[in-house]
Image 1 (cartoon, one colour):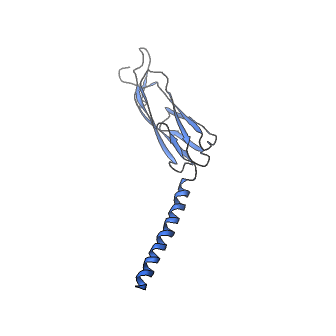
Image 2 (cartoon, one colour):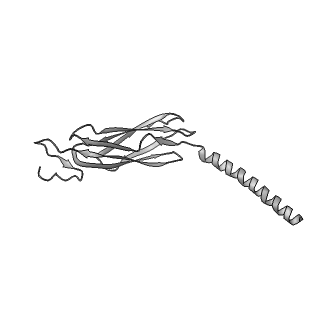
Image 3 (cartoon, one colour):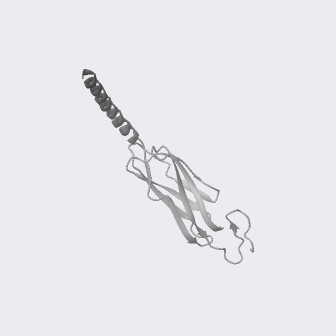
Length: 152
């Protein structure tokens, strides 16, 4: 009987210590910068040749430490991001503005990879989609592969 009581007390004390360690781990996991985007895909829809290829992704630091975007890189030279370079305080917002070259005819399916000190998503991939309409008569468009468009 004493062995059974001793074993039960030992098991109970292990659960209390274990739950305390788990609580500390949870608190530690919540500390730091966190990034939350209002959207992670922008669909241009059908855009005119040479039209406005600018879109903006807004994000918020929902963490407890300043958020720093260290880099944002487009998947090709036709997708150029600019971003907030100053640290974003907890609760504050920042932006990543992407300029797509709309003189490239055809479908848009590009990525922007964002790197930061966020604990929840240190690397985040944003997407842009859509379609650039054919060029007006008399122009020499380039399709998204970089080759001249057939029949132009």
